Length: 225
Image 1 (spheres, rainbow, N blue to C red):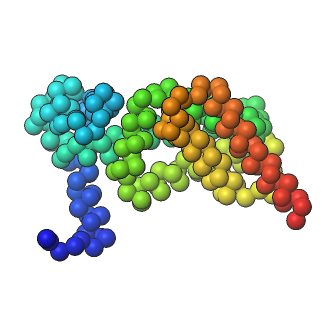
Image 2 (cartoon, one colour):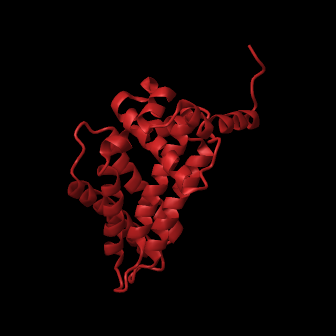
């Protein structure tokens, strides 16, 4: 048995495993990387992670095995990059929904726009997201998970404070963190735990109710102090 790795050494080794070998800089390289990730997701849904091989991914992506290894050192690397890429796409969807229109938008309207966009983004590709979310729990480092989570919270915070009737007495950082935690937990668990995932409108309504109830209760608690 070898010498146990300390935390720093383990982190360096994991980074070597999952870090892509070649960062795509040109459009053709981006297309190749995207095709590899698309192939991985397709196979992940069809077969499960353990039954997917690098050769399988290369075949579905339409690239040679040697080319695949030029981009990624192994399956864990493809998985980590793909999960992060999908999270970034979901963040972009949230950012688009969070944009304040020319007409002032109330807090309730803001919450509806953000919640609807987030729910539709995940339920619109439910099988793919379900497989990726299970995998994300296996591969993501705590630092990586915290980073992307903070980005989602920041987007929610910016949307809330831009609302025309945002109650200035509320702490926007705390409120946004708790509101997004409600949204993220309810949607992910609907996908991962429930045997029959609720419909989009039903889930949007449930999440909106939970978030607006939390904000209302917080305001009432502050008024009693």
